[in-house]
Image 1 (spheres, rainbow, N blue to C red):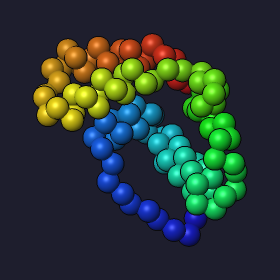
Image 2 (image 1 turned 135 degrees about the vertical axis):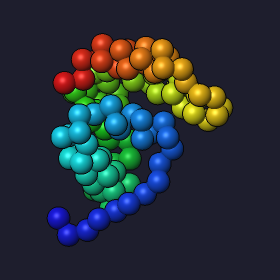
Image 3 (image 1 turned 30 degrees about the vertical axis):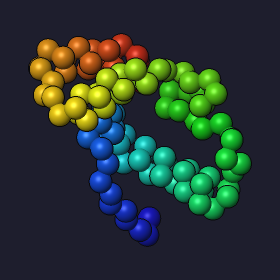
Length: 101
């Protein structure tokens, strides 16, 4: 690797990324940023090309559905309300139940 990128992201994105096992985060972020840059900045793939998702599937046929959970997290963080530990535990259990191995 020759370059490093650092950027701020919304708290909901950070939370979602941190659901990945620590050993997989860097590789996942590297792959996602590289794929997006190739697709969106370097015209390496058509804009409507299927986007692979972790665990299989594509943007056309996702293998897992994170959207409702991420929307809940984003809404909570954007509203500024503090999530109770029980709410966080419930969201974590829902994420774990998706079996994202």
